[in-house]
Image (tube, rainbow, N blue to C red; front, top):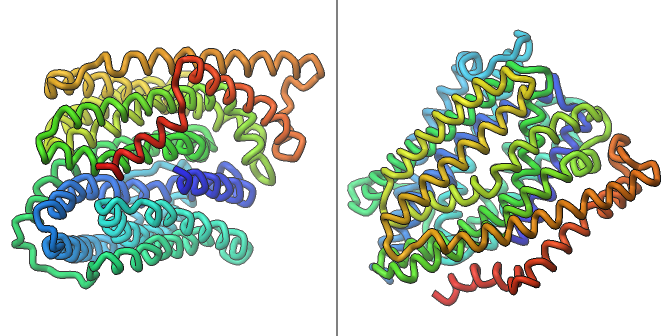
Length: 511
C-alpha cells in the first residue's frame, strides 16, 4: 500500500505535467485515449487475466513440488508463450495501426485520427514489456514477495515525467511515447534480480506439453474472455467519449487518475495480498478459513472504499484544481473532470469488491460465473452509456453507467457466492457497509460545514484560481476534518483501521 501510494502520487504528478504541457483537449485527448489502448491490452495479457490464471497454478506447484523444478519450468514456458503470441501480434498492430484507430476511436477531425495512428504504432509495444514484467510480478507474489513488484510502477511514472519535461519541446506528444517505452523497460528490469535470487531462469522455452502449463492455458482462456469483455466495454466508453464534446476523453482519463488512488492503495493491494492466500486455502479444502478470508477482505474494502468514494465526490473540484489546474489546464477542464469523477466515485466500492470477488471465484477454479456476470455487467454498462451520453450528462453519463453496472454485478456475485460456499454468509458484510456509510455521512457533513465557514470569508469558489500554496492550504482545510472524523467514528465503533490493514497483510505471512 505504501508503494502504491507513492506510485499514485507520481501518477498525479505525471498527469499534472501532461495537462500543463498539452492541456486537456485537442492533442491531449488523442494522447490520453491512445495510451488507453495498450493499457487495456495490459489488463488482458499481463497482470489482469494472465496473472489470475497463472498465480493459483504456480502457488499450487510450490506446495506440491518443494524442489521448485516445476515452478521454474512453468515460468520459462510462460515467457516463451508470451513472446510467441505477442511479438507477431504487435508487429501486425504497428503495420495496421490506422485501420485499428479508425475502428475503435472516432475523433471528428481527420488530423487527430492520423496522429492517433502514429502514436499507437510506437506505444503498442509497451504491451510486450509490461506482459513480461507481469510474469515476474506473479512469480514474486506467489512467494509472498510484494515490495519489488509494487515499486516497479514508480519507474514508469518517473520515465514518463522525465521524457515529457525534457523532450516535449522537440518531440511534442511523442515525448510521452519515449517515456512509456522506457517505463516499460524499467518495470521489467527492476524485478529481474529478485526473480533470479529465487532460483528462476528467464530463458524462454517453447515446450508446452507440460500438463501444469496446459492447465494455466485452460484457465487463462475463460479469464481472458472475462477480461476481454471489460476491455471491450472500456474501449466502447472511450469510443463514445472521443465523439463527444472536446475534452471529454481527457476528462475521463484525468478523473480516473484520482479514482485509481484509493482503488489502487486499498482495493488492488488487498486483492494482491489475499489472492494467493485464498488460492492456497481453496486448494487445501479449508473453506472455513477461506470464508473468513473472503469476509475479511470485503469488510476491509467496505470500510476503506466507501469513505474514499464519498471523499472523491465532495472534494473532486478542489482536489483536481490544486493538483492539475496550471498552464494549459483550465478551470473548465477541472469542472469536466470533477463531474466525471463524481460519477465514478459512486461505484468505487462496487468495483473494488467486484474485482476482489472475481479472484475469489478464480481461487475456487470457477471461471464460468465471472464470465457470465461480466457479460451482464458489460451489456448493462453499454446500454446505459448509449442512453445517458445523449442526455445533458454527456461524458458524465459514461461514468454513471459504469458505476451502476458494476454495482449490479457485485450484487450478482454476492448472491451466487452465498449459495456456492455454505460457510460464507451475506451478513458478514452488512455491518461493515452500515459503518462505512455512517462514517462517510459524518465526514461529508464536515466538508459542507467548512465550506459554509469559507463562504463567510468570501472564499466560496477558492479553487477556481487553480494550483498554488494558498489553494493547497485551503484544500487541506477541507480534506483533513473528514479524514479525522472517519477515523474517530470508526474508533468509536471499535474499528482500528491501521490494525485492520495490518491484519489483512499479516495473515499471508502467518499462513
